Length: 237
Image (cartoon, rainbow, N blue to C red; front, side, top):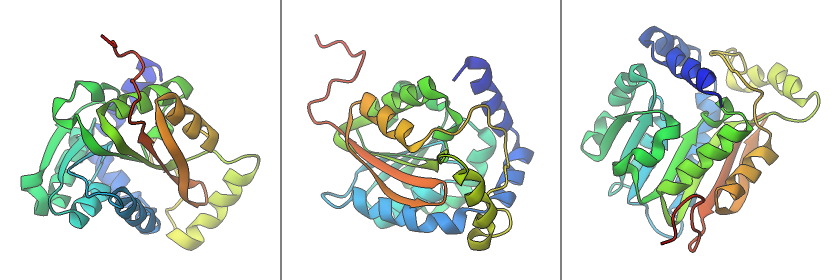
């Protein structure tokens, strides 16, 4: 993503009025309850996570789902929007002693020391704001926070082939309410395709990548950081 486009996205979300308008218009929360729950239990199948980082966390709903399931886990809420932090503090109030709030751009994840050695890095409806290079850079940044074998979880919109995007948008309100599928904020690039996500995750050193769930044009994609993977750009000495 260009610096200008990235700055425009962040500026849009910095307004409390804008955040309140988005929250009121969000028509997908009910539809996303199933993938939130699926991801929550999949990441703890082998062992319960200790540190969960939620990037672009917004109101913190996804993070709250995970922290409810794992009472010993700590969370790091990361979002570039100061306006979202107030909403998230209310939503995550029951976990206030277990959550650290960081207002920061998603591209600056490697600079957030408290987020390092995460068992899980979540992101929900964030990655569709990136172009191809930005998507790869985002996944590299997220993967750099993970412990070996840690989980990367993306729940996001994709661009389906051909006319399927418009077909899905026309019928989605029948299943998710009248606001579902209506744009609520600006987008500066076409949504990544499913193959774009999987390729970018592989480029970031993530393995065992799969589409765990899909409804219409929204998908849950999961992968793990390879145990012996050396992150691109890291000095091996």
